[in-house]
Length: 78
Image (cartoon, rainbow, N blue to C red):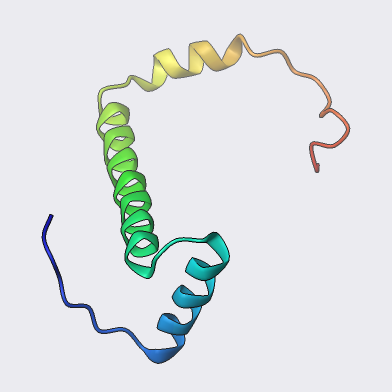
């Protein structure tokens, strides 16, 4: 494990401290978890972009044509 020095505005530090206390974890653990979630989100987005580059629009449209047309279900928010 390595150590990093991090400068944060007081307001952000206060929010982190409050949330970490509420979650029952240390500030370090909270920040580590938050960074892990952000890294995962970015890596997932990159992966999906790479996959999308390999697709063919015509094949995608063929698949979409197989989806039945119907009214939204109640609770769908539409």
